Each structure stands twice: as C-alpha cells, then as structure tokens.
Image 1 (cartoon, rainbow, N blue to C red):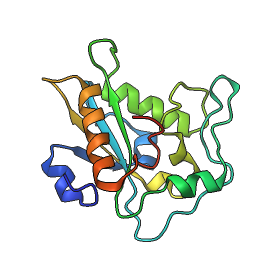
Image 2 (cartoon, rainbow, N blue to C red):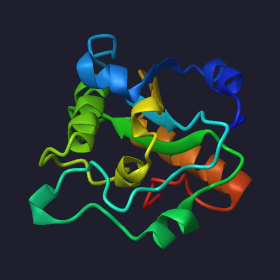
Image 3 (cartoon, one colour):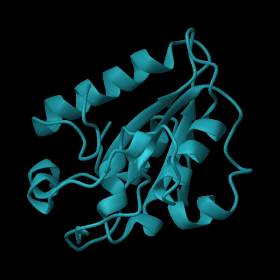
Length: 165
C-alpha cells in the first residue's frame, strides 16, 4: 500500500475518510465491528504544532510534548499519521467505540486513549481524516502491527503519532 495515496489506501479496503471535526459531532457511520483505523493528514502545507493541544489529561498525565519532539516524529511524504486497532480475541471494543474514545480524548476528556495523542497537538486536528477497515478473519492487532511494519519499511520510522509498534 502507498501510505501517501488515498486511492491506494481505499484499494487496501479502507472506507470512511471523514474529517475529525465531523466525527466529533456524529459517529453513527462508523461500524460496530472490530478492525483497524488510520488518521490522515491531507494538508499540502507543513503541519503547525501547538504548544498545548486539545488532548485530555488521562490519570492526571499531561498529554502534551515539546514541539521539538513533535518535529522529530513528523514523517514527510505520507498522509498516514496514526494507525490504530479496535477489538480482537482479548478486546471487545469496536471501531465505533474505540474511535469515539479517541475523539473524546481529543476533546480534552479524561479518557483512556493515550496512544496517538500527538495528533491533538496539530493545529489542523479537526481537518484530519479518519478511515477504517473492518477485520473479520484476522486479529486486528496483527493487521495493525503489519501496517506499522510496512510503514516503517517505507519510511524508516513509525507513523507520527504511533509511539510504539
């Protein structure tokens, strides 16, 4: 898959491609199924990093990092800034409730979605797109890990907001 081409991401089976700001108002179009999801930065301009983002303070921990850390983690030449998963053998979450949790964290709520928090320090976070792929025959964690590994093979680093493999 070409992580810099929406058509390639669609060909891989991802659907949705809905702006974060729209999903914050209505998540009804997200499937109640296990799967993987990605967050895409589609601007043609370099990102603007905020000193203080909109992410929630989960368990009292500040989700914000220094702008230098954000710059060091930014990956040029890709639209994909985060890859996540929902559900599986040991997790009953669905794409709908996991993405909703992620969005609530981005609204400053005290919610357990610490992974991917860097996107909430992007000035353009409301215009990021979220897409998803329902997974029925594999473990979402395995698919997520494979996507991250494919990304790392292409860019020599993880997606911007993926803090671990």
